[in-house]
Each structure stands twice: as structure tokens, then as C-alpha cells.
Image (cartoon, rainbow, N blue to C red):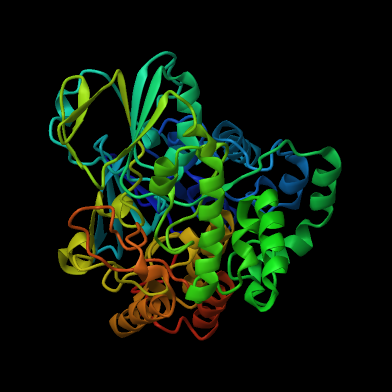
Length: 548
């Protein structure tokens, strides 16, 4: 039951049941769930509109890597039926329009404060709640604080000598100007060939007089084979949404598509090569799903990657460039990239691939990137350097739990939590789709729905049981983190220096953060904890009855 508003006489402080930080898809669905249960909710968002990741990432070519028809909320049948996606993999503007439609359809905007950053969140042991402060000088007193800040939202700005002196145009893919930029005829440099870089590079190459791609580590790029969606296909999927959702929730990946049950290595060489070609031609996640033991079997992964390297060699005309573009890590141990004409782009005369692993970037001048004794003169520099993933957006806020302990100190050696949802010593603080969860390895929308539903059910159960607070128990927190790492060590994931390990951020602890045990298994564990009286969590009884 919601708490009574106690803000009378204290104009500088607003009392609400819950503060939700972030108005991306996670924040919006969390708001919807709590509001429908009768709780007062304040969402605080740094941007001037909803969208989260899809508000900020407006770079050329930005697209989802989950098929559009599955990258949408399932909580409302009417919403599913009324919205029509136009492409197999929707572009950023269309996804943003969808999120805006959700906000408007369910009248969520009145509960969101835009262009406001949360600077601190402190647990108030006297009031048994959270004091949340903003950069506007406001303070919110809330019983619950829910961090929907996103796993991929804290942009990584690399420390390059002279970066502040560069006189040309300067952009980060995660902070792209809303109205876009005209780079026609410019000498463009782009640093980074992860997912953002892979999507942006073909489009930048078409605009540039010359494009210099500064690559440290090549990534696998599977062709998206993007295309317009036909009305009969849309109608067929809509008629099957209920079944698709059931299969997705029962899967390890959160996606309804299921590949072969047995390893293709059991087939004759000719048959499996033909299978790889067919699935490569379909594109998207279908190729990876060809290999059921991709992240466990080195033999299976070796064959999957050998086929991709052969495609690169056949596509890229310059053998030396093809060799530089051929990754050495196991497929899937870094987030797979989907792209369009990515490898073909390196056949253009106005594109140069610069290997900065062999010759690192030493500095920037006013007009150039310097690698060894070579200078690359530029009019524009694009940073596709990704994010301080999973923990960055949380640790950039001063979050303090019992006794004033800072979350950044608690997580100094890596994130610690139970089920990825709560942290010992930080009562009534919930984290959505962060470390210790499978969200970054699965369909984010499905992961968001699961977390919002689990958290809102938990909040309801606390009142039903007469509890004021819930937090993770330290011993269960330690067991969960040990389990997350033990499961990861059974796979090939730790063999790659990925953002899953924090390897892209200098000084960040090298700890494997996502849960690789599968979405369905994770959901079952969360449900089991809740049904067993929130086993693994500590509940504190109310000092006084909760007021309706």
C-alpha cells in the first residue's frame, strides 16, 4: 500500500513512495507497474525526453540487434497489436517513436521530471527510506529507490593526450546531436569497431571524402540482412505473440528462435558447410544459433569462426586488410555485431583501416590523430568507444547505504549483489538489468519486463507482510557472485577482454559481470526466492503500520 504524503511543511522536500532513476524502457515500465498498484512515483531523467539508450544513441546507422517484432513490450496485448514495425531491425528513430508512443499511450509523462540528474541517493536510517538529491537542488524522500539507469548508458571517453585541443568537429556515438550532422566531404576519423562503430562506419564512409577507421581489436560482424517487413509477416507474428512470448521466456536467450538441438559437427563436412551458408544468408542471430554449444565447445566455436573469417577473406579485396579485420577471439565472447555492408566498406578507395594495436594512438594534435610517426589529418573525429558498462551509470551517482557506506567502495573490487537485484547494506534499493543478471546477453525488453514485475510484486508483498525494508543478505550475496563467476568459468566468455569483464575501462576491476546461466534459469531462481519468503533477503518489520 502507498505511504501517506508527509511533505506538508517541508517545501524543499517531496515525499513519494518510489523514485525511479531513468526514463528508458526500464524506467517507463517500472513507473507503469507501480502507478497501476497505487503507488506515488517520481521518475527522474537527465534527457529532455523518454527513450534512455534510444534517446542518446542517434549516430548514423544506430539499430537494434534484436528483431523488431520481438523488441517490444508484451505486457499489453493492445499495444502489441496496434504498433507496426517497418523493418526487420528497427533504426533508432523508429525505436524512439515506439518508446514515446508507450509514454503517451499510458499517460506516463506527468510522472517524469526531465533534464534533471540525480547527484546522490542516501539511505535515511531514521525515516527508513531514501533521500534522493538532484542537480536542481531538490530532495525527494522515498521509501524505495529504483535504478533504471541502464547497462549501456555511461559513455566511455578515452584518455588520449591532446584530446581537449583537437579543433575539428568532435562526437561520441552515445552523445550524437539530436538533429544530426552533415559530414559530407569531410575527412573523418572513427575510433572503435564495436557495435556502434560497425553500424556507423558504412554510412560515414558514404559521406566522407576519406574515412580513417582506427581499430584496436576486430569484432565479428554478422550481416543483418535488414529489409522492410511485409504486412502478411507482421500479421502472422501478431497472431502468434502469446506463443512467441511463452517460448522466449522459456529460453536461455530470451528470444523465441531455437536453433538445432545437436551440434552441426555431427554432420558430414559438406552438409554443415551448406547449413552455414544458408544461415549466413538469412543473417542476424540465426547464424550464431546454428551452434548450440557455441560458448562451451571450442571445437564448435572454431568452426563457426573459421566460416566467418572465410567470408571476410572472400569479401575484402585486400588480403592484408582482410587479415586485420579477422577477429581472434571466440565468437560470442564479445557482444556480436550485426551490420550492413560492413566488410564491403573496406573495398572503398576512400576508406583506410589503421591498426592501433600494432601502432597505438599516441596523441591528438589540433588537426590530426598521431600513431607512431604517422599523422592522419582530420576535419572530424568520432568516438565509437562504447560505455563504462553495467556499473558506470550507477557509480557516477553518489549512492550511500547503511552507515554512509558508498556503493563505489562496496564495489571497489567488482559489483556485489544478490540476483543482480539488491545489495547488502542498501535496503529498498533495487537495480534493473545490471551486473549479476542475464540482461546484457539476452533480449533487453524481456529482461526489463521481468525485473519491473518482480520488483513491483516485491514492493506489494512487503506491505502485505508488514515489512518496511528488504535488502540482500551478505552471505547470499557472496554465494550469488561466486555462482555467477563459476558459471562463466564453465564457458568461453572469460577468454576475451570484453566489456563484460570491464576490460575496456582502464583501472576497472576485471570481474565477469553478466549471468550466463540463461534467462529462463535466472527467472526461475528469482521466482523461487520470492515464493520462499524472499529467501536470500533480509526483511525489517515496520515500526508503525503502513498508511493507506
